[in-house]
Image 1: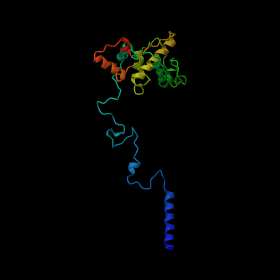
Image 2: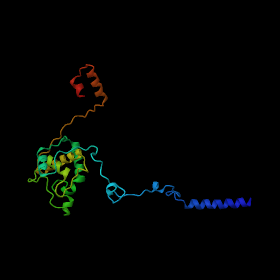
Image 3: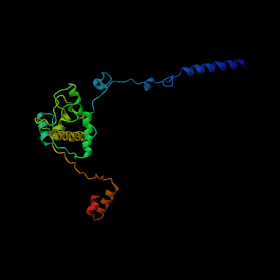
Image 4: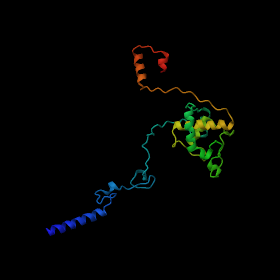
Length: 226
């Protein structure tokens, strides 16, 4: 009996010792440690185990990013001139698009071009970058097309913002840049365009109206618009 008691005390002490040394964040035994602590690779580090020698591999040939659309003007002087003359903003000039454009402009553009578009951003004031033109520069005579083209490709010391923004966001920024240009030139404020509500083809009312038309029901003009 005394022997069993002594053995129980020893086992209890051993169990307490093991428990006190345990770390809940690191299991005591790892049968496959690579499954728990995988080796990290830098995206652009040099590793022989990856095709091309780095972890960040090129996309499969022929693939495009979701939502990507081709841009039909080349990054050449001729392409720039053509975009400046031909390209028009497809987004309606609404308060929502202008507000979104202002927010994006503040994030990406104001640091160099200034909040007012006069080329006096904080980096210019600190002389970190020089020669940023004002949007009302007569010699440049920017247009919607030229603004979008520069956002897409970049120009001189300004890099491309095509990877940071999508097509809609670039056109929203363009709206706001042209708004700043009008303010600098003292032009009257442009009126917002009225845009009707967008109707989805999946809307039950639209589907019901289509079924009625298919059965020969004649809709009034008001019903058609609704």
